[in-house]
Length: 87
Image 1: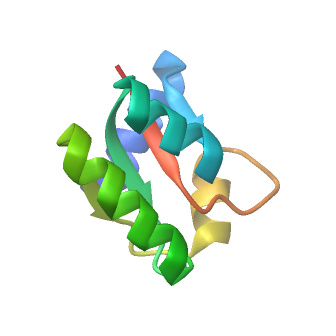
Image 2: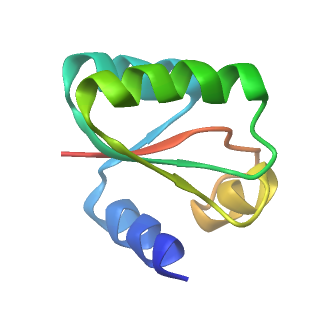
């Protein structure tokens, strides 16, 4: 899974941005270069994210697992609904 590899590399470099508010803020100010969302991300979050990613020309990648699996990959004991890779 290439997305899992990208996430782990960003985790090692300390460039992960987690959470809806932080990722959205990163898209607005241009500090995020790629966004991952799990398959169970709420539709209203996806709609807002697509809007900001279109404006900032940032790629959105669907993570094949759910929010809990995304949290586990990042070493967090909670679900992650949006994950961004910072510049």
